[in-house]
Amino acid sequence: MTNPNSLTDDKWQAIISNDVSYDGQFFYAVKTTGIFCRPSCKSRVPNKENVHIFQYAEQAITEHFRPCKRCKPTGQHLPNDEWVALVTEFIDNYYTESLTLKTLADMSHGSPYHLHRTFKRIKGITPAEYIQHKRIENAKEQLASTDKAIADIGISVGLYNTPYFVTLFKKKTGHTPAKYRQVQNQSTLEVSPNGKQQP
Ligand SMILES: [Zn+2]
Image (cartoon, rainbow, N blue to C red; front, side):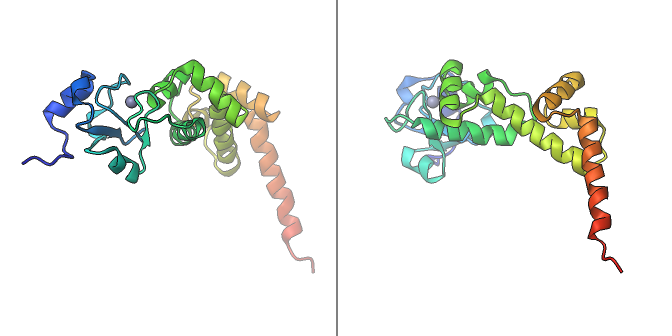
């Protein structure tokens, strides 16, 4: 007897060929996205090493996977707020890598257009704006607390093009990264003498 939760060649073939005849026999979840699907789902083929097999949808839910919005493995729609929460979580984990609306839509199994609109309606900003926000906040922290070169900080937060990083940073904070660091360092210097006890 084979373990019903093991990823056999049959199941893997069913997943990559979106084989409808396997629907109901098993579900597959993808560790990196936190979503589970029916075998027939036309979502992007996941990396094999990230796939978990479940015999029943309830098992996937118990393991904290969320049902795919496209193939609806539980027969129900994923509510929009949960969909947006899922995408937000993904951005929080991967914003230092190159992320596009299409990547986010693919991984969360929706259309880019629908994702853009729904995300904006629920969070008040677009996915692209949210990604920028995460990147700039991280860059601010690094500028204030490290001596890393500005270009390296840009790269470390997913902004590989240094002039673009500088322009975006200035637009969001009012300062260039260099000026921001200078101001942060000055305010630290100004605080410390006051912190000392006067005789
Ligand atoms: Zn799916």
